[in-house]
Length: 123
Figure 1 (cartoon, rainbow, N blue to C red):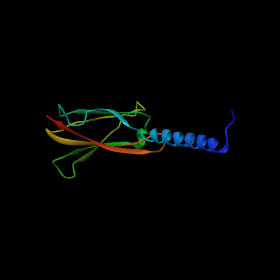
Figure 2: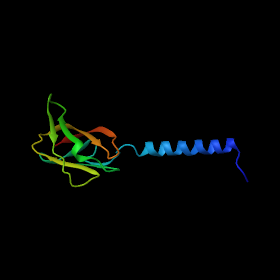
Figure 3: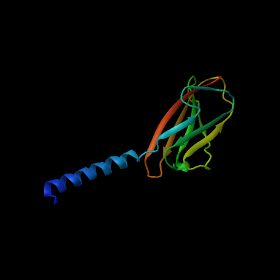
């Protein structure tokens, strides 16, 4: 059995498409789990934050910021613990009862930036 030029061209095109889409699927750090989870109600005033991703992230160039939803200019940067390469963890103290958003940004080791936010409430 031999392949003609059209079949070889189709095979090469198919392989190229699979490679492109598989690379795209792994191009960004995807949030797998979080604590608190989105829309969770947590006990305060001290809250531990943990975001777990599907790949390693550059913690030095990634960030966690907590914002009180009912106050203007109430953004607080959270110091990230650099001990786990697939996690962003930190602690924030002194949160009053109310609504907050955890804004996160990570730089995956492949160079892609991913951002998101998680709303939560402190009781």
